[in-house]
Image (cartoon, rainbow, N blue to C red; front, side):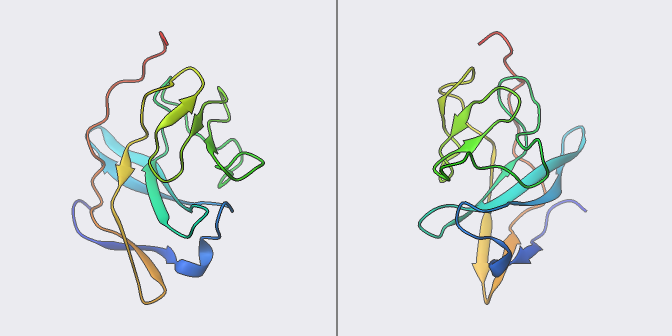
Length: 128
């Protein structure tokens, strides 16, 4: 299913700094893993589930995207830390890179993905 808005989850499924909701989006090479989380402060955010360092998924256990303090998203493979509101990497091997953000809309107790197509992403940079 390319393009088009679609329902991801109920708003109540996203608890600040709690487990994320996994889903898929269409990438240029086929389906890509993605996730939605609620950051401290209440904003819902969604990203392609791909670390900019080597392209691995962030969560080692499905839905576990936050590190223990709930302040950062963490790559379980390399320990990179990302600001949950922006996807910007603040520590780790991909410092300065950013997760590919997906546009959301939250309305009437539901979280919607605005387009099912992932933004073009740079190739992983394992040299960092």
